[in-house]
Each structure stands twice: as C-alpha cells, then as structure tokens.
Amino acid sequence: MSGHGARISWRADGNFRSGDYSRAHDWTFDGGQKVRASSSPSVVPEPRSDPFGVDPEEALIASVSSCHMLWFLSLAQGRGFDVQSYDDDATGEMGRIGAGRFALTKIVLRPDIRFAGTAPNETELAALHTQAHERCFIANSLKTEVVVQAP
Image (tube, rainbow, N blue to C red; front, side):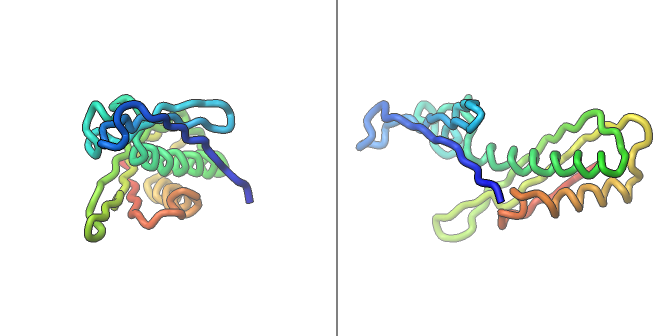
C-alpha cells in the first residue's frame, strides 16, 4: 500500500503558559501546497483561533466528501456515464461520546451531480453511491456515521 503524510507547523506567539496563544498553524503537503489551519472558533474563541483557517473538523468532512466523490466519478465513468459536475454541501455534527469526550458523530454528504447524455436512473445512482461509500478509504477509517443524501 501507499504512504501519505503532511507537515504540520506551529510557532508560539503570545503567552503560552497562560493559554493566551494562537492556535493557527500551517499544513504543508507533499506537492508543496500550504494551507492555513486553526482550531475552530466554536472550540477556541477568536483571537486565539483563526476563523479563516481550515479547522480539523472541516478537513475531515472535506476528506470524506472528496474521497466519496473520487470513487463515484471512477465508478460512473466505468459504467459509461458522462459526469459534467459534482458539488457537495457536506456537513458534520459534533456530539458527546463520553465524559469530556466529543467527536464528529455524523457526516452528511449532499452530492448534486450533473450528467451529459443519459443519466443513471434512481436505482443505478443509489448503487453508485453505495459502492463509492464502500470503497472510500477515509469513510472506511472512521467510526463516524456517514450518510449520503442524494436527490
């Protein structure tokens, strides 16, 4: 199998010992892409978080959505469908899973897919989503419920 990695870089600014420090940091990926990241402002209020940074919860939701989409596109192409666009307004729900423990307990994918030519019927579309979900490496790595709400 393949290996994957990311470099996470944070530097102190503020008073670390008192807890008054920035949670903003950078993610750098193997292709050189750098993304500003931070804790969610709903977890650590501004100014100690950066609302413009991607928070880990958003990144996980985006990873599940992206993985599902990539498998869907591959499967649809293999069955002769011509996908023209794929948009997903994915969301995640945080919940308590124990004393002092929280998790993303549910991720909902809402793909809006446009086809050129013949589109899959309702049964074929549902099967493509089921197969994409079963093959998604990220979804297979989680305990979180992942729901696909396709129109």
